[in-house]
Amino acid sequence: MRINEHIVLITGGARGLGECLTRAFVREGARVVINYRQSEERAHQLVSELGEDHVIGLQADVTDAEQVTDMVAKASEHFGAPVTVAVNNALVDFSFNGDDRPALDTITWEHFNQQLNGAVGGALNVIRAVTPGMAEAGMGRIINIGTNLFQNPVVPYHDYTAAKAALLSLTRTAAKELGPQGITVNMISGGLLRTTDASSATPDAVFDLIAASTPLGRATAPEEFADSALFFASDWSRSVTGQNLVVDGGLVMD
Image (cartoon, rainbow, N blue to C red; front, side, top):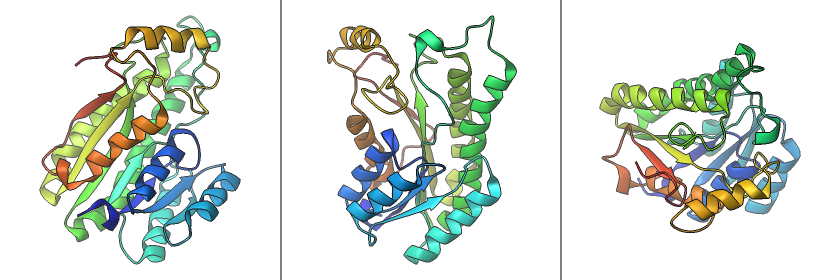
């Protein structure tokens, strides 16, 4: 299936990296469901800009399974076809500010639980909601957004990094289970992106350090990262599943 034939669900698709993902898929002709939790105004602005024929904005908290199931049903009804690409991008209440992060002597299990519930629980809810339609279509693409921090913890964000590492595990076990239905499950792991809403609190010195450490000599832009998702949504990746692609300018080579 070509990208312009897909119905693409992007969680957290109204701002930051999510907005860049939305724009990348619309640019290639896909119809996109912009999921948002609180960014209603921004989602409506994108729908107005990109066109109602190509984009719909739907509110749902990804940690609420019932809301996610209802959102996927509305999306399929709106476009007259099931969601065939799901990008688990939503980030639950997190800011990349190394100077203000909880260290090991102050972090609590509630910090971990919040990130695990958002990253793993949210992805699980989405996967459960979209796989029946994908199975009916005979194919599907699930793309989880990860991080290179569990390979190279430049800044030790303990809770966020642990949740994304768990999401990689879910990516691989889901790939094993869903493969017979023609559904691939992969992860794209970025470094610190310059700049998104979540990374806006990051000091310039951290960006400069990362840029100096990469072969490309710069921090990755969210638009560059978003373009890599197109590969996993395309037929070019039809035999790729359970993989983790690191998109960070070569900072991590694995």
